[in-house]
Image (spheres, rainbow over the protein chains, first blue to last red):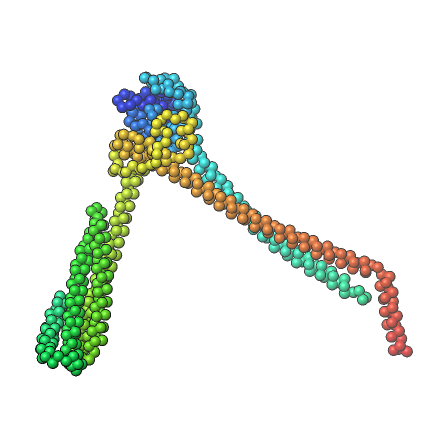
Length: 199
Length: 345
C-alpha cells in the first residue's frame, strides 16, 4: 500500500500539454540508477493522464503495476501514482485534500503558469509520507477501523461480563446455603435453650 | 361443430312443430273460441312456445358454442405468444391485451351459460307434461353440460397459458439480471483502462451545487465533500462531452457508490455497537440484582448467627448461674429420698 508519487498539474484545455505545478515522488525503493528514469516516467504519464481527464472528473488508469488516479477540478489536476492495494476512495479523498491545500496556499497564481515549476512544495512531500497509510487520507476508513476495534473490545467485555455473571451465580448459591445453615443453627440453639428451663 | 349439429337436428323438429302449429291454427281459427279446451290450446301454444323456446334455446346454445370456439382460438394465439420467450422483442402489451379480452369473453360466456340454464329450467317448468319436452329437457341438459365442459376446458387452458407466461417472464428477468450484473461488474472495475461501456443512462440528479460554477471558496467545498458523496455526479451533468461522459458516469457512480457504501457500513457498525452496549447494560443490571440478593442472603445469615449466639449465651448464663438450679436439684433429691424412705419404711 504505497504511494509512489503525487503531482499537481494545470490541465490546459485540450491541445496543449498540462503544466506541472508541484511534484513529489518517493523513489527510495528503486535502485539508484533507476530513480531518474522513474521520475521521468512519472512526469510523462502524469502529463498524459491529466491531459485526458476532462474537468470535474475523476479517473483511474491502470499502468503496468501502478494505478494512476487523477482528479481534475476546473483546470487544476491532481495525479497520484499508487499501487493496486491502495483503496480508490482514499486515493481520491487524498487528491481532493491536495487540491484544496494547493488552492489555499497558492490561490489562483497557478493559472498563469506556462512552464513546469521546479520549486518543491513541502506540503506535497509531507502528504506523500503521511498518506502512505490510506486510513490517514480517508476519514471514513479511519472511522471504520476504529469502530471495528471498538467492537472487538466490546465483544471481549461482554465475554468477561458473562464470566462475572457465572461467578455471581455461584456466589448466590453459596450465600443462600449459608443462610439456610445459619437458620438451622439458630433454631437448634433456641431449642436447646427452651428445652431445659424446667430442670 | 356440435352446436351446429345440435341445431340442425333441432331445426328439423322446429319445422315439424311449426307445421303442426300452423295446421292446428288453421283448423281452429274459424271457431274463434278462446275457451277452447286448454289441452288443445295449450297443446297448440305449448308446442309453439316450446318451439319458440327451443329455437331460442338452440340459438343461444349455438351462439355460445361459437363464442367458445373463438375464445379458444384466441387462447391458442396467446399461448403461442407466451411461448415465444426471447429476451428481446417482448410482446408484453399484446399478451396483456389478449389476456384481458379473453378474460372478458370467458366471463361473458359464463353469464350466457347461466342464462341458458335458466331458460332451460323455465322450459322444463312449462313443458313438464310432454314426453317430447322430457326428451327436450334431457337434450337441452346435455347441450348445456357440453357447453359448460367446453368452457371449463377453455378456462383451464387459459390458466395454463398464464402460468406459462409468468414462468417465462421470471426466466427472462433472471436472464436480464445476469446480463445487467455483468455489465455493472464491468463498470464497477475502474482499474481497467476505460473502454466504451454499453450506454448506461446517466442518473438524473437534483439541482447542481455551487461547485459547478467553480467559484466557491475551498472551505465550503471541503465541508460538502466530506459530508456526502452523491453531490459530485452533478458535476458531470454540466459537461458537454457526451462520450467521455458515458465512460465517466459509471466511474463516478462507482466512486460515489463506494463512498455511500462505506458510510452505510459505518452506520450499521455504529448500530451494532449500540446494540452491544444495550446488551451489556442489561446484563450488568441483571447481575446487579443478583449481587443485591447475595447481599441480602449474607445479612440474613448474619442475623441468624447473631440470634443463635445470643441464645447460646443465654443458655450458658442460665447454666452457669447455679444457685437457683442447685436449690431445685436439692428439692428434687430430697423428694426422691422421701419417696424412697416411705417405701422402704
